[in-house]
Length: 265
Image (cartoon, rainbow, N blue to C red):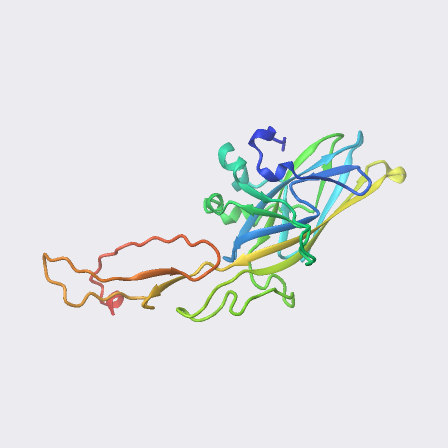
């Protein structure tokens, strides 16, 4: 896929790093990446990135990630291809790396993908057509998509950084906080010259932060009873809706009229 003009690319397009030996460069996927504010919903978050062949020779590149079940790569994704130019440009928010502390996360570039845009995605397109390698012609740039599956735990046995009741608890009493998982990405390249092939590589560390979006009612209930209603007169009852999580909550209320005794019981 030809790369669109830079003025229609998301902000992470401006983040460029070279491979170890300089045979290719990677845009949009820094060596230390923090993919932040992912909804823990079992679906995939899409992060576009770009690989450029910096040589005058054809380059073969293998794409690998660990854990493999949580990450995959696509050369084309129908959801991302359908995003408008305006939404595409605003899709990724970039927070520059901070070296102000001595934690393991120092130096990470934080990327946040638009949840609003991703609500329009069809998950079927995120499940198909994964690739493990690409071939780039001399000086060619390829756009790819990294898909991160939002499940907890991401891999059995993976240590998760959690707070007291992250992602679980009883309705009305819990606080749903962010959890983090870690993954590694490795791109290995070779010029296609047989025994004279040059080799190169690029590696990235990916930390993903997830949170379950939870709505709670005050008082806690799944049913609302209006007991003493009189025909033709208004009835008022105060209810409070609470976002019990650290991530944003979108909700709607729909009134369904029914006389079905099963529904009303």
